[in-house]
Length: 59
Image (cartoon, helix red, strand yellow):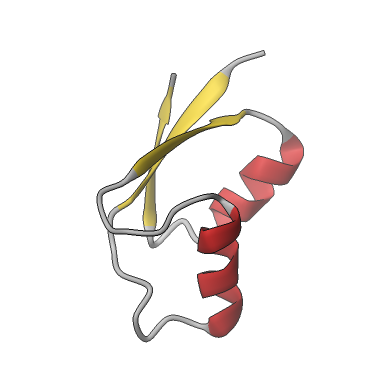
């Protein structure tokens, strides 16, 4: 199965609390940090919710 590289490019300060929790659930703590996640429906849904805060690449 393919993986996705997700990078936090914008701070969560001032973001909706639900979005802050979603970013943290993705494993992102600091700006410009990257995590590799499986490409599945759950991950895609989380990324879609916070797409204005993250950058996604195919890994």
